[in-house]
Length: 240
Image 1: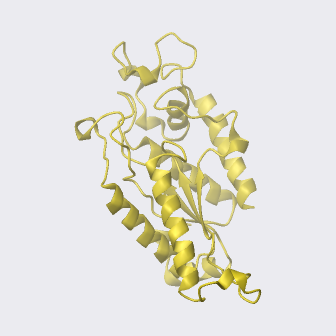
Image 2 (image 1 turned 120 degrees about the vertical axis):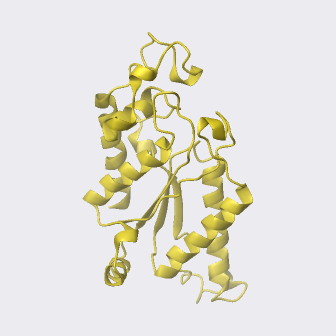
């Protein structure tokens, strides 16, 4: 179920049942001439929706405007790169609210630049800070040295930050930027947002070279569906 669709009694029931909260995180960034600029968020939203069809989980509203470093273009190309400190403050405050709702397992699922990129790093930093701060709101300094307290830190590690493509899903799932894999992902989930006929000889290098085996031109729904199935299966196993 989607968090923003819930009524209060449904939220309380999900929390009482210890359902995980899945938080899709992506960005708005140019993805070649042939795909939606919101590709990364769209894909992780689709994956979260499919996970929630198979396990009891709540899907939070997405973080759409993740850091991009303007690596592949600027606003004129459809890319947004927010102030990083401002983004971190937003992330931390929203994650704190999720914990205050009562969720014991908040799982942020990253689809952009991997775990070393600024998007994942913002969430990881916020999760680490919240763990320590919320413990010290209730327990004294030195709490872990006290045998009576060290097993009671309920919120420590409650926020997990993970890549959308877990190791167990690869292969067949893999990453690139608007190339064979990402184009196939979108063809399999939102085909109306892909226009491969827009690709030509002026396409960016990351699309590949027309005629090669694994490029944006050769991307296809069969490969995309195999990746989607593998990613969802890996997450269902992880959350089960």
